[in-house]
Image (cartoon, rainbow, N blue to C red; front, side):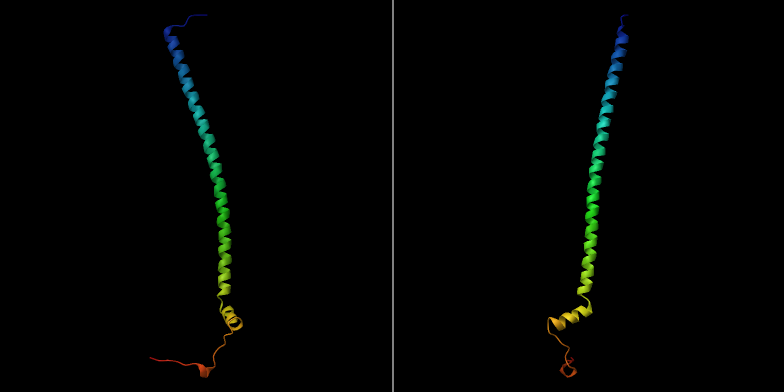
Length: 100
């Protein structure tokens, strides 16, 4: 085996250091990719849940609007006034009009 000169040892040591630095950077990059993939999946799952919740709220809102329009319809108000409140329209002679 031939002896290495001092300059060859320095070049070999620099190459080893460069290799270790590059290896460390590759490992850091791999960990960053793994973390970003994990975070992306977690955020996508949360987004899906929020979209499902928003859709349920839209359905519930439309049902409330339909219920409101049903309860506020003129025919329903007249029906409730006659059946539950026992209200009737006054006779024309019972109507009094006040003027200023």
